[in-house]
Length: 195
Image (cartoon, rainbow, N blue to C red; front, side, top):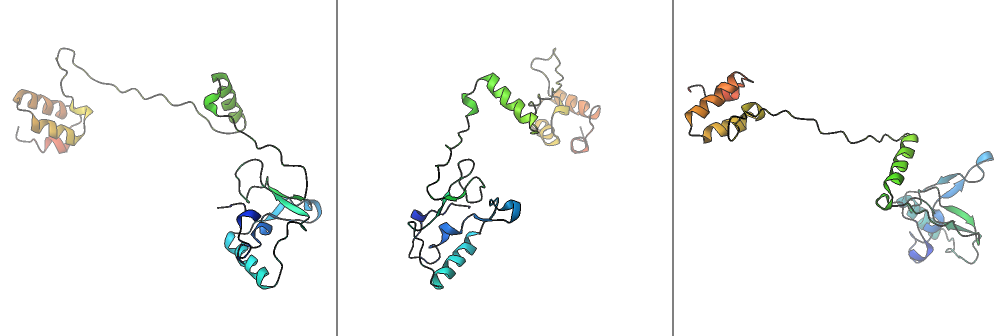
């Protein structure tokens, strides 16, 4: 989307492509905007329809030799006809400035990266430090080896699965007792009512 139409990329025998290079970023403006700050940017289907119409109306193909202006692609940002850094200049004008190269942050020192982050914050970007992980409390009975199963730290499904898989009636009763005196979730207590 927004591809720059270049004369060497079009088929001059195709009426829908013949005038595409001339139909991009057409400067318009009156008074203080006479410098062409505003531009007509045609969507591609409309530009193709205009190109076909001009061909059918008998307009001769584009002749680069007689042209007095040429399109200069943007030297900064996306290479798109929607980028305002590109535009029409008198033919034979000075070449465009060298393209802007953005430094890879991975190649910067820590101080350079910090300076970039501070500059972005200064310009209004919201850049926060990563939030630390929230600490989670765990209850571990140090007298047990290994520590006992705590139903409060598990979902209803996990507790029920644990209870189905144990053969020790004492551990079974201990887990249900901890559940009754803790969260008392019906999905566990009702399912294990008879114990």
